[in-house]
Length: 297
Image (cartoon, rainbow, N blue to C red):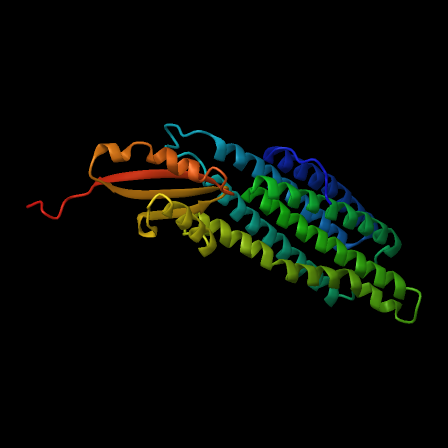
């Protein structure tokens, strides 16, 4: 059982940024010292993660800010915008690393201090997995799109660190054999494989952010859950419009009424209905008159 105490959503993001900063400095420094492209890639990825984590903290601050004269509807689009930017930046890092590694492969490989690189890779694996598990646990509590994006980043970093460790372990194992010349290709080959494998994650993050910025309807399971809840109040699915935006669900319900008294308390009932929903529901009830069929125009 993972029992590390979880703080607020903002403190979780700040924690993630702090760990990213440590790995950025350590990874880049160790990568330069050992001559490893893979560790440099890991350090560069951590440096980008630091910047993106700080962006997440700022996006959360913007999203929680009240509406004003400049932002009449608030700034909740800051969350999906931050997620889309994250995806694009991580994809760019993967592409740059891929081209650098391909160049190293085509020019005879790269000599690396395998024993020193192996020690750092093992430390990186353990630290990244612990951070990833902490963020997973935090996201189960906060149900935050930003924390979920951070969790994906650390999942990628954990897998990357694991791949780097296994690669260096193999390279270290063959360095004293007749196949030692192949060890030169281990480091750039690891970067090629990791870059290609991880490209799917930032692409999904970018698409998710764009979908939410465009306010596309959420996935079917979430829509069904909302429809089931509203049916308790006699509200049909055709009366609802919704969109998931970051940690929020924008919900618009249109209701026909014959008397003003029918409007009383419905907004409160809808708010109570979604008080335990995984996302913060921003519901708006729109009323319109129900005209009798006998009315002559």
